[in-house]
Length: 252
Image (cartoon, rainbow, N blue to C red):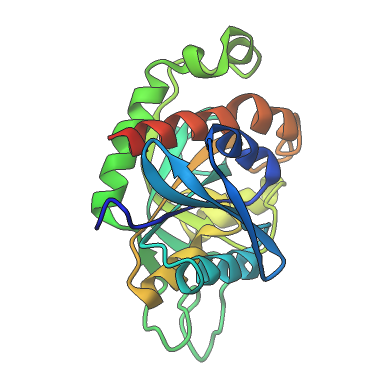
């Protein structure tokens, strides 16, 4: 990819995006499909930063606009997710190697989770792009206090946060009860985290042949306590993780 080719950076919530925009010295706003796309440079790279909004349809619309309207040649999604895999704790980061829609079910015409007429249920992320992001994530997690501060480390028990790589499940439902979490774990035992956008972006990028990768900070365990301190965690931890990881990745 040419160094001048624009990179699309997506998040679903404003709190996840604000620090990224503050880091851009020359951003210019362009509104398309009711969304503000911020064009500029960061770490010497041309970037387009956008708030996708929440849910699969909103994320797919945003990804399509990034590719069709702005010509991005790779897309990276950052934000939060609920941890559902064994050993995945609050403050850890999950790097997706693939995505599945946990609420896709066109049975009996197609197997559960399979996307109709695609012949598959999972969409892989780009290995090379993911490797670069993994190095950046490990760099940030090794110095977590420097990025989020000692108070946040103590408040959210961010002791020795880890990077996990594997399957992320997406669906148009905020999984926030223990019973829902257990049902998801039974249906997709390989899933490490659950969120609401990634699988849609992965499918769009697959359609267009655009490399895609996603980093998700684990904000909760997708159980009965999933709502607790959610907004404060995004502001104090997840947004700062995203800033540090994307900055380190672009600097490489």
